[in-house]
Image (cartoon, rainbow, N blue to C red; front, top):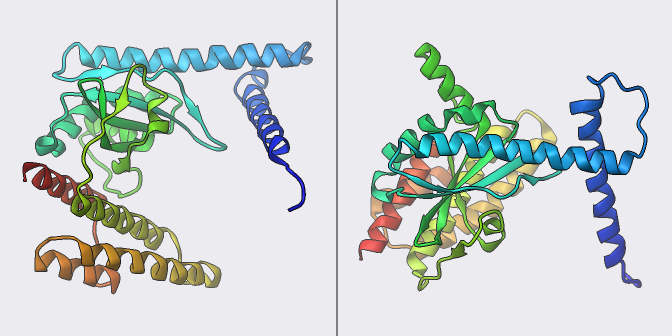
Length: 281
């Protein structure tokens, strides 16, 4: 409260990052090596980390280029792996993805890139690119979904689950750091489309909380009740702003009452269809 600790925060984050890299080195390399001692650890681990990330990126680039050669898409390759405390992700730009054909195009894309299931990346963010500009909406696919799809190709059996399925994401400038020479497309804000997008993002978030928090657990149930109030208020506020059918408004109201559910695919399709309609107008 009384002191400037901004530098302390930066230094603390740097040490956490070094700890993360050191643990990764130990788990992914040192344990299976014949070494019993490590000299000049800082340099050794830093060089290993740089080589490790380079190899991960090269593997992803190879898979994407192989598919690009036979597909009607063109890609903007990620220039880095994004690391968080527990997960890794990459951002991939794609040209040729048509919103009106989203379901068909996305399945074709996932099938063509199914070998991403063998990489060590947890999340893949796909951003629609037009004329070197990123459109504000994209979608994210978990590695586990690529694994399920590969199993479907190999065995003909697809494991139905909402976990890991493609979900919509909002693209901002922070994501574009991973793509060279790509800027965020600036378009006049359509308040109706903006409100609808925010409402459906909140519907998805609330759906995830409902699926993952247990009402049988007192702490989780109390937390869920707070989340229901918070997101319920926001969703209702956006619903009052948007122009849509009475049937859809009733579905949202029943969703807030727990009488209606949206699957992830339904949320994506609803959001895509609405944005296409707004663009046509």
